[in-house]
Length: 384
Image: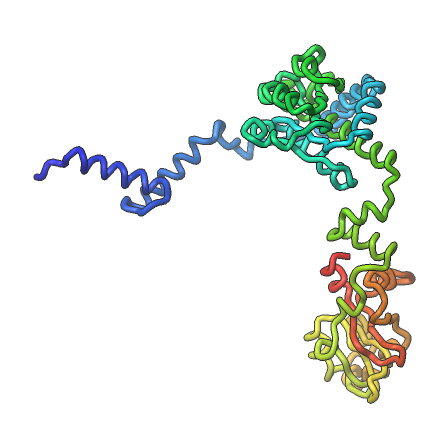
């Protein structure tokens, strides 16, 4: 038997390492899969609880909600309004960018508050404390604000960030929940968020402290919104792709999609003549996926509409006689309709108008010629 050299052993180990890192596979695949499963299992610290051991009753759940309410009330009853006012005014009068930072759950809250300010047209950004210490702090400059969220005020990454941010001549504000913490003493301003305890039975999981951070930040954001007299039009301009923005923009400025931009036309239209038998038009009714038939005359004028609901009602009332009925005999000759130049949001309002909503509107021109159909599904797809 040939004795394996040290080099061969090293090569073997190298190939094994390549396999585990996703390189060329030289080992048995099932064995590699078992290795992956073992790694995944070892990453977890606790085994999955048995389903039979899991139980929560209504009383326990209700008590938890009441406890959380009491903890939040403690915050509202003890918050220093003078500190909050000073903080809000500082943000309002800031000439620079308002940066927020935090670690862990407080970091998520800080990021969300920053994004809320951005949506209100306020220049803001989230600054990761770790990334800041590795180059991102270069974005800070004189006149900027840096708001640091930390429950304890002892977060090492934030404490290390403070002297670096001060060297950039940024104004530093800490938002904490522990009196006399080191971070508060290092900043230009501190806002104390009163915290009685966490709802967590161990008083560890940050489920109440993050709630009051969020309430505090979002309330201040709305205070800034009111102080800046932000209008609906300005708010809409910051949300052009969402339903809020589209609706406000369309209603206020008359911009955006018109009916002709979202309507179906030509071969997509479920059309028929008033003399056509209902049963002969079932394919047309179902294949065009509009939920209706558009009844026209020889000159393409709109006569009426016949919906799948009309079909069900006619079948229930007429029975076998439906085979002899024409679309013109049973159609609605006074349907709602709209012009192609109308705004898409107007079509939505017309569909939802009383006495009962409809799922579509025929689109006609000034001469009552049928040129299209706009559906509720089409409007929703357009973002309304």
